[in-house]
Length: 234
Image: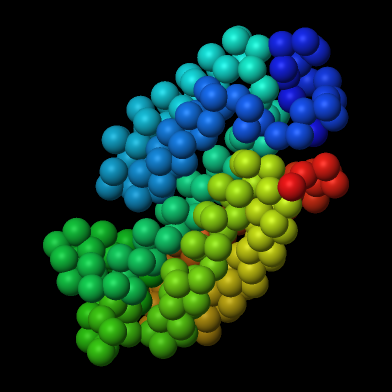
């Protein structure tokens, strides 16, 4: 594990210190980072989450300057990316899955996205017993992801920030789950082209945008996750 403890140069391996939990500032930084990432992932509360997130980063830098035990910066950046990505997907699909799809915010959010990128959120919206999009395949993916995959990923990322081995395993497992959902999601988008993408404003461009912005976070983070050595962790 790579740490800085005030006695060794930053970036040197220090096997004597088991975890970062002896650092008070790092602990406070993590909580502000978590709250800020979740708020930024909510999109609507992003303007509030950004200063909270920045304050968490300031505390991290302060811990470094004080010589306290801190985790590697690369690990912090990757986990922050995972938290924001999972929170964004959770909130977005959660708005459609839960009764929030009947609110002015939900209707405005999805009507705008449906008109521009995916007409499933525009045509016959809120016409099923569960509300939201009328496409069964989309609703099934929402139930699995919002109630299981996304919360698991957020919990795993938080545990990984605390150097828990199970958190590392959960984040890797949910990353592969992200890739599976990505393949299934894009497949059902393609198979429902005439009902969905053909009626959106941007068509193929919208489809490619969803391909890139959907669940590609797993492809970015998996190589790093497999490079982490967890043998000395709890």
